[in-house]
Length: 255
Ligand SMILES: *[C@@H]1O[C@H](CO)[C@@H](O)[C@H](O)[C@H]1NC(C)=O
Ligand SMILES: *[C@@H]1O[C@H](CO)[C@@H](O)[C@H](O)[C@H]1NC(C)=O
Ligand SMILES: *[C@@H]1O[C@H](CO)[C@@H](O)[C@H](O)[C@H]1NC(C)=O
Ligand SMILES: *[C@@H]1O[C@H](CO)[C@@H](O)[C@H](O)[C@H]1NC(C)=O
Image (cartoon, rainbow, N blue to C red; front, side, top):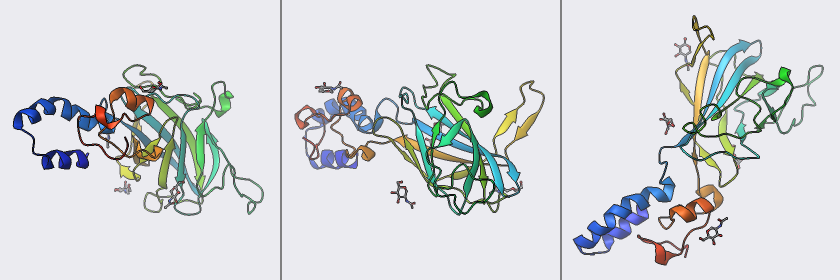
């Protein structure tokens, strides 16, 4: 986007020409990123519901706050890197794709000992005793505006060898959110206000022990395609970049 601006100011074109360009230009600028939904994001919220003797139980909720981009089959895959030596004792509503090396555990064996676990949603029809609210859609998410019941996905995990207070918990790092298409770029986990929950009868409010959020945005960079001002709507959504001669602003080397 910087490139477009710089190249435009460098070129001395007549003001009239600029004026004509501007109307389509502002459109093109944001479009290179994501014209139709510049503020769209996927928010991942970790709510620590209770502390356990060696860690905590958290409900992780993925909100698709995008306006139109569904997550289609085979659905989302969420990964992160533990800050310390945490393990996942058990999960509901989702599962780690690999158990990893749990050989040091005698007796109870964790669900996953991976330093960088990767979690997927359970499939529809998962046994009732493995479900939680908003789970088990095979990782498929719609968007809020069109399908307000299905833009949220949740799973629960019991984390061990972790902090047991909001001062000793170390936030997981390096979140990755994969989905069909170029994928997403995720920021760091940031501690937020503890989420409040209203009981079904509306008569009591409880709150998370601690909450952190991760914001992920749709990424072209991950696909190996530099963000370019040369994308047109049609080509953007079908994953190709149009040739330079159809652009309204400076092109990079993607002709
Ligand atoms: C993510 O989207 C939500 C819902 O539209 C919005 O409230 C929030 O501010 C957005 N966050 C960021 C960092 O863009
Ligand atoms: C931890 O909990 C205390 C007491 O509720 C609160 O004052 C503090 O802000 C919390 N710290 C974090 C990092 O959540
Ligand atoms: C973050 O994750 C990516 C992909 O899994 C990996 O290549 C990278 O080394 C990780 N970075 C850190 C700091 O763990
Ligand atoms: C993407 O757009 C190009 C150029 O318009 C077209 O040739 C191609 O068939 C499209 N691909 C898909 C999957 O729609």
